[in-house]
Image 1 (cartoon, one colour):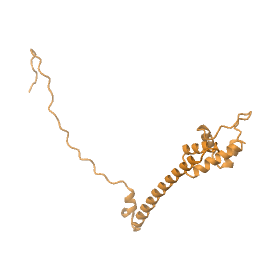
Image 2 (cartoon, rainbow, N blue to C red; image 1 turned 135 degrees about the vertical axis):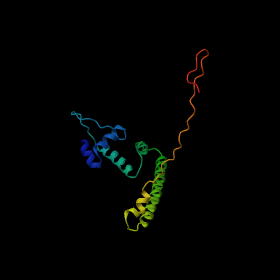
Image 3 (cartoon, rainbow, N blue to C red; image 1 turned 180 degrees about the vertical axis):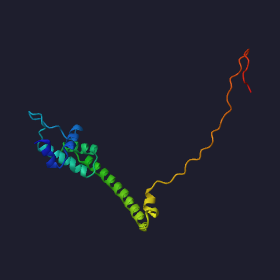
Image 4 (cartoon, rainbow, N blue to C red; image 1 turned 90 degrees about the horizontal axis):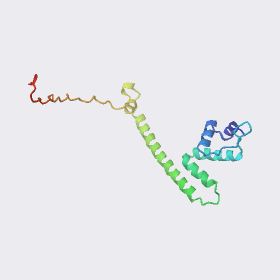
Length: 159
């Protein structure tokens, strides 16, 4: 099958498929006599695996590790469990961040009185603080350094 069909079957952009090939997540397919990529069902399964793992938030390096393990079915799954638990911890951290974000937005929305924009507490909270210009001290001027007179030469305009 060609790359367009693979993309439609797996709901993946053609450029994304090429990217996964370049970074070696997806093995390069054999080429036809016309030099077109010729994908098969193993590519469909592997790309579907990658897409599902991405949908679950796994990073590409973790997906690579998962694929390496998946390619060796007789191996222990302890590593997969560890990678999954690490992903769970990341998801929980994101949930905590999003909860804080929601709480802050609710707090801001609660301050809205529906008045004029000039009195809007939401706009005020989103705007950067107004910084007063720095107070510049006048420069400290040092007296000029005059060269030492050269013995035997008249000093000109010396104070």
